[in-house]
Image (cartoon, rainbow, N blue to C red; front, side, top):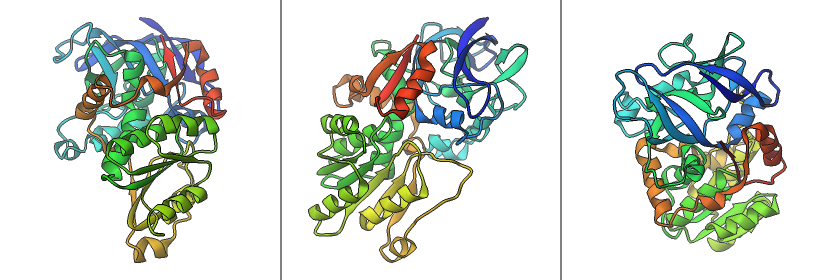
Length: 371
């Protein structure tokens, strides 16, 4: 069948909407009618070249939700009409990492950059003018219809609006998990969150839910600081130096228990600032993505060793998506996790490029494409 989708045809470049040919689902696959897709900075990293697309054209989008339109032959566990949220990191359920509950590190993730099927880097489900099109994370949620592996789909309750449920497929789980899992925030902690866009705002929510006594949001954009104060932050400042001083004033000069680093484009300087902001034996969690071609760093090695500080990377919030996405949606249903408040503006598919312009301008916590 034919479907419209937003693709990159060059890098650096901008997403443009074209007509694509979509294959029917094969065994172990689903065709999904998209309902909503979040506009995440990771998509923009592919447009700028910070992250390298496996091939061009490249169909973007990795934070999405929709309704199952067709089920591949012999595929069990799903039926037409099921509501699903995509996990941008596939889950096989069998590898060493999945078996240990570390689904975010599933071995299937090694093939994500190809934009093809996990088991065959020459097998694609989208094409444009006769040429294969790569699917971001194997799901390409910037398409009206998409064909995906069941390892990328999590069935969710039909009474939860998919326009907000889609956010649990990346931004919510990444930020929330960075606080709850990677930083291991405890009741009474003092936590700094550097950058409170679509990821960091959920680290704020996670830290508050975990019982932090103080959550200090850091962002140069006033609108984001104000929003953070409504979603669990106790303080909001414009730069990390002020945040670190504030944390020390609360801890007898020691520093924050943890600093969660979530800028839109992360550099080694940001990570170094996070390490310096935490106390002895404190944790700096690196969440953001920067230019993967560079290896810049500004880590205070003496503090890291002599003060026994911990520098922790965090991928998708160290989460287990098949368990955590339903759990987060249940928290939303109970009014504990805020999702509606994260959506600043809704866009049509044709407005995807405008959505990223708004993201760069600091106008959105999260923009959402609604189909």
